[in-house]
Length: 399
Image (cartoon, rainbow, N blue to C red):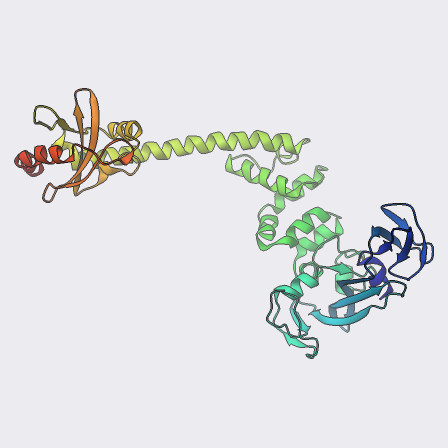
């Protein structure tokens, strides 16, 4: 309790304009001219000086005690609530919120207070009994808060390399892994705490450790120090993507990880662009074959009323050129692969005035767009030209 009060909350000294400062923990008053932080001359607590007329401060914190009961590893969760009044000694209240019970096989049972509905995840019915509950986010978060440094563990966990520190790892996850995962035991015994922390963080990280365990061992044997574990795994995955040998110490244990990582980022990007181009090339071949099957019978088709000329679009490349020039999507939306419509272009002299999509069922205009999808002012005139040439289009369709 004393440790929780001293270590898990912030302590303040409230100072008035005349310089009289009050330690909100022990209630001692003295004249203080310094700003920032200082030690209370009475209780020795490091406090932060605040210039204020306030007389009350309320703080709360969660803390955990790691202990054993028979063959169970237990993580007990507590709530401390402190109301500190000016001139009075702080009198905290403590309440056990719940506990995690971990058996020798790594199975967990949660005992805790009942949660209530509310905006905050740590809303508890303080009058409810400590009973077996379903594990939830509140207990998971609280059990990863402050940990009392005097830790007691069962013999199995001690045998598996635990040395009285959880290394900023969630204690429940750490104990589960040490009881069930030989790789976690190996990492703990070899003091590879960065890798152990990475393993315990999430299931996908645990899968990375499993997948690249041999690579980790080779790097370790060659004296590599795992500092930035996330970057190292990203680097190893890039080596694998590029088909490199993951058993080569010169590759997997670089002297300058960041430089090596950046080099392979560039290589992977080049490879990705190359692969994308190949995919696009293969797709273009398929599109060209399909396009010619659907539209080749209309290639070279022209019609005019003496002013406006309408003609077919005979290559996929022309669809994209017209789309870029006119700010429309006839290329990117792959109008050239539509089976029941035909796309045409209309111009007056050398100026393109419209892109037209017509139905191949009854040859009516579905849309007639000017630049940037605007409505074309020549739509009625264009419709007249197409109506006058329906017979020619129908003959092309039957060809």
